[in-house]
Length: 206
Image 1: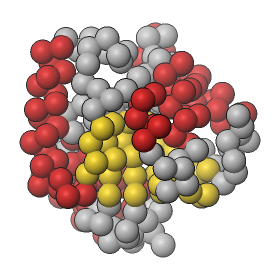
Image 2: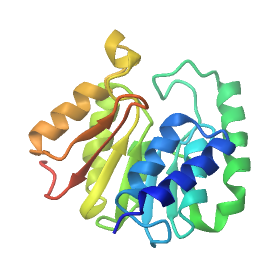
Image 3: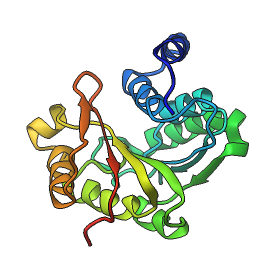
Image 4: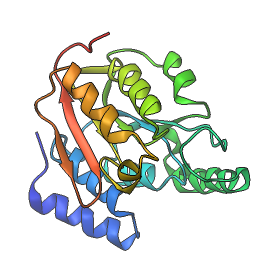
């Protein structure tokens, strides 16, 4: 059962006071339309960066158990981060999620490596915001969709944004191809925040 509009609006006001980024607020709002804030749920975040999105999800869903995956290594994502910046991102992430550490499993690995440590059919949602290349997004969609329970949700960021438009990213073509192959019809997106989401009702095409 989803949260009421009033309850979601209250959480959005709280996140604005915390200066949470727009896409993180949109993600929380999206999840709240599918789960109650006090539901016991399991989720995965791919691409933690500074920990802002993880912090927002953990703050609004007090019974969420989150597996957060990021290697914080330059050259492994389609970004211009230097290693010094990645080190700073890691410190920031640790500070942001430390008060929720009992509910967070942090895997400092690439998404390709981390998937082998996680159990299939256990998770309610996965949020993709790691490698933004077409190959990276396609691999994460294929690998992590198999970890979801039936009816679980796939969410992601940067769908159809400037990066896709210039060819620097490959989020949109990878997502569109996955949805076509798996006959996904319940696809939604928020153009303002570049968040996309859909429910996975059937087994993923190999």
